[in-house]
Amino acid sequence: MNWRAELQELRLREQLAHEMGGADKIKRQHDGGRLTVRERIDGLVDAGSFHETGAIAGSATYDQHNELESFTASNCVFGRARIDGRPVVVAGDDFTVRGGSADAAIHEKSLMAERLAAEFRLPIIRIIEGSGGGGSVKTIETKGRANLPGGVGQSMLFHYTSANMAVVPVVALGLGSVAGLGAARLAASHYSVMTKSSAMFVAGPPVVARVGQNLSKQELGGWEIQTRSGAVDHAVDSEEEAFACARRFLSYLPNSVHELPPKLDGDDDPDRRDESLMEAIPKDRRKVYKVRPIIEALVDRGSFFEMGAMFGRSIVTGMARLDGRAVAVMASDPYFYGGSWTATACQKIVRFVDLAETFHLPVVYLMDCPGFLIGIEAERAATIRHGVRAMAAINQTTVPWCTIIMRNCFGVAGAVHQPAGRLALRYAWPSGYWGSLPLEGGIEAAYRADIDAAADPIAKLAEIEQRLNTLRSPFRTAEAFWVEEIIDPRESRPLLCEFARLSDKLVAPGPSAFPVRP
Amino acid sequence: MSDTSVLSELNAVVLTIAVATGDRVQNGDTLIVLESMKMEIPVTAPRDGTVAAILVQEKETVEEGQKLAVLGE
Image 1 (cartoon, rainbow over the protein chains, first blue to last red):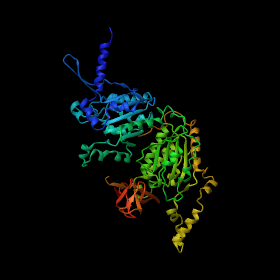
Image 2 (cartoon, rainbow over the protein chains, first blue to last red):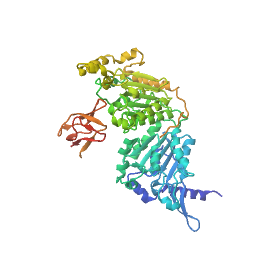
Image 3 (tube, each protein chain N blue to C red):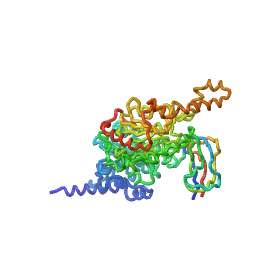
């Protein structure tokens, strides 16, 4: 006696599950330039490391003798796997099975994948295509009743969709058309990537047509729309690149908030002094410069990994390493509004520093901020509301913080260059230039009476400007100890690496005082 | 090669136009200088080519996403 016959049935059922939606549907998936969910999982994780849960869950039909006649797998495929040797949870939508929507999914599978991540403290990668377990109007007919979103028995998936972000790294890949709950699961992540042939939207073209907009999928939710809107962090040409981005992002983070980020052996001299930094900042203050080469010159060679490059572009954000330690880097980009904080830049900062705080990453801020964006558009965008949210987010951090003032530091947005109320490390380059508000316009406001009384108001204005400018040397500020240190820009990397080493003992595992929001 | 539109990446004012229609330019050459927050922000050629059209004038206000110039072969 043995169980061979039963095991044969088990293998048969697993084999049927691996057939997914059938050869025709798989061909359609491939013809569209897209991989199947199982190919995606294989491409994402370490070879042979995927251990599936619930493979044989699905819907079956039986013949008159109660023998299995046909089987269609659930369109949620999930399990544990390893990425660079570290355990993760992967949950993918199978678009070949009725377009990946909820009427074929077993709700509990998506839920268990999220719970597995939360309770076993493992990063989760959501591979999303379709409505990601969301509904279809067809279910009204198949179930004979209309679904109440978030109704009895449904709320836990919504709970984990955002709550997991306070516990484990959540990466989401949008591969194909993503709508509804799928779009929510894509956006509710720490890092999201879509392919350039994909599209993501709350509701797709047929639904949008009914509100009078006739748009293609790409026009409605293509990568240019979604990366510029900040709904998706990054767009790539191929699914393989999306997998590489997910692996790279996770390499900087701990498995959960209960651990610290992995530390590598640095392969770049921490005392390296990059000569390019001597001329990185133009002497003409109206001239811009490229900030990414400055970041590259400061961090461990090749370690900078930018996130959200197309959104809130006056601030560059990304992960990097300093002497092997993972850090969160923010840097001003003067090409966009001179590096001033726009409403979208502030939204980007909130999300980014929350990520750093959640996963215990020290923050390095390379600043050149002439203040908040000014003007009527900025007022209409509630820049100050988003600005004070960014200020609060920075002030709420407890992770070690180091700021290098590269050039401008003006106004309230300038003041928020380090968390208020606790000590951070701060260095200024000799190109540092600061004040409560800029001279241009500031003089007219403060010296109105003098200017009006002058015989030649324009000459008077120029004279006052000249007078004030002679007092603006950063050395005078340092003399009064209003700034603690002005450094040779080439000393920045050794000092930043020292900061990263000092941070080792200042971060502790555990949940952050506030749970992060998407 | 089809024409390439050069778009403004931000709301700004056109400060100077550095090239004229018909000029041969190389990838990275400055086509137009925009001004925003008192900074001069160069708009550069995304590839080698010939300036097929300049669609803005100096002192003109431009918006993010607005077409500034067209590059031909």
